[in-house]
Length: 315
Image 1 (cartoon, helix red, strand yellow):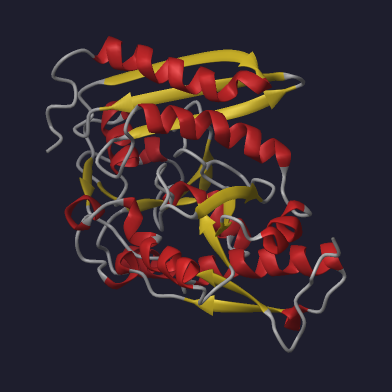
Image 2 (spheres, rainbow, N blue to C red):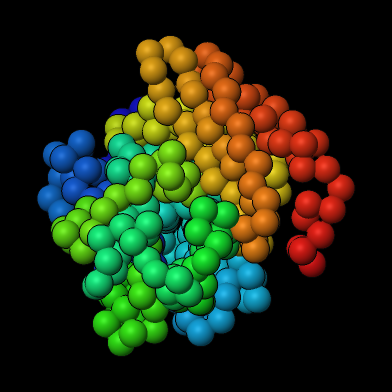
């Protein structure tokens, strides 16, 4: 069967959030598709969709519905046919998808580290007693409080530009931004330092872009196969299996990172209490093909180690 490519008269529509970072990710996807299929940029149209998570920025995510708030409207547009593919930050993606949609294409992963951002301090360790750390991430909050119990954490939501303005306004002494996002925006200089994963293990799938499509859309499936990065897919299979087995959501502070070394996958994981009173960590290795099974097994053993009561703070 001959692949039916989009044309300038009938462009392939890429749905995305409307933030500068989301648009940068959509433009990267468009550039890779255009190059892979020798097509002009005009063969692809970027459609910005405002999500509930983008509209409500003055409340913690756990109070308004969790991760799906950044994907629901985009997935509805995909199911309705208003767009042809959806471009997502993978760390925003729930582990369960709506029926009829598939998420099986990933671009090469960017820097996984968290960037430390502060107008007055070079590192997290330099912060004085009771300094205000701004973050909306339960993971980052818990990790900060485990390592630096003398600091205070305040709610700090918004896109990159909004959070930088909040820092300038003195809402907090510092914050964290994913290095992947800063790199994609050409703003790596914003971070005073990048935190090694041994100091702050990143969010599941941090730095990865995923592309979602309708099940049964063979034309789009074939087009996307040309830009899929297999190694990123292998790493995310382990991380997201770990996430799913822990029932991960915006109400669960957890972190995980899979790395490849030859034919071996190495996975690190962490689950924490939000107040920083307890952290459980583990790391294991397995053949790459067994990555998802490794993620599930490690999560199950960590749940056993946590024991009854560890998640009592969840509703």
